[in-house]
Image (cartoon, rainbow, N blue to C red; front, side, top):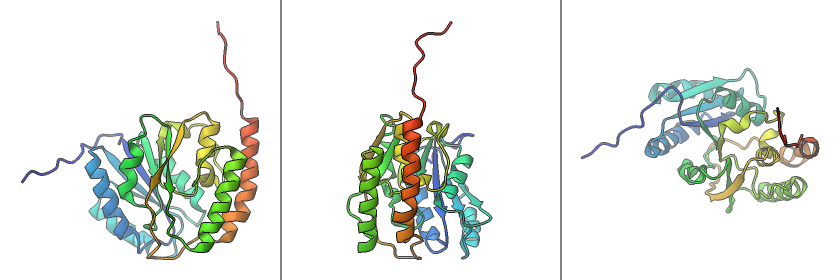
Length: 247
């Protein structure tokens, strides 16, 4: 029986998976082995970064236990609950991989879809997951559909499902990207405004079985409206020029 060779780990990994977690102590022991299995099969060097966004459950203890089993797991703990955008940014600041992959910790994203995103990375700067068959409550599906429609029409990003956290993008694209609370909802629009190529691919979606959802109607419709106005303003005010010659 032949043993599959593990990817050689160098100083700078090729892939960084960034996972924000808030009270996901139940989900992480199920999620991490699946993520690691997928990454090993890709035969690329990798790291997994879980950002504990001030959890009040046993997420810290669970991460400490998982770190003993998975040597390429890195854990970052914030000193309070700052929200998904801050958790993502903390992970981005720490990530060393040339390609960054983001996903949720609640087991609604499938790690097995990661290769599908990476297949398109040579042609695009960002590949976004599109949950074509949502496995959420009616309220979440309707509110997300409204939010996605309004956002897409207002920003012109032509993305159906910006709320899907399963994304892959080149780390170099983060340079110069504006950082603000709520930015995670507008990653595709911000990337397109900066001139990067963005595409969507259908991915799986599963109902939440462990833990509780952290986002309600206020998070999905009210607060993003203010953020949307800011993103539109950024798009209109972005500097756009080309140097004809220089001597």
